[in-house]
Image (cartoon, rainbow, N blue to C red; front, side, top):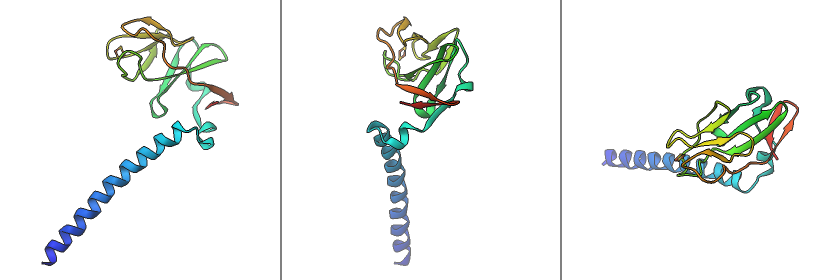
Length: 135
Ligand code: FES
């Protein structure tokens, strides 16, 4: 009888841990979607992480930041407009999607090469000192 009790307690504890993880992830996404002021000022990158004429992917923020000209920064969602894969790199002056080869402009996120036909969603940012933050 005591073993059954321990298993039951362990089972509940394990289930509780899983629920806690899911809740924590969901809460983070909800916070970003509602524009929590704490998130708006949170730096997503440092300006020196974004090379001129190229860009960098910040997967943890689901944002790709580009610098088409020195001092001019743009940001786009990493979600490819073809089938939703995350774009994973910026090279040869273009944002690259690994799934089916779409390439996007670092200036305005427009598709340079398909199969994607729509531009990446632009994300409003501002430069605060050496930090790039959501606007
Ligand atoms: S999902 Fe990006 S090219 Fe298909």
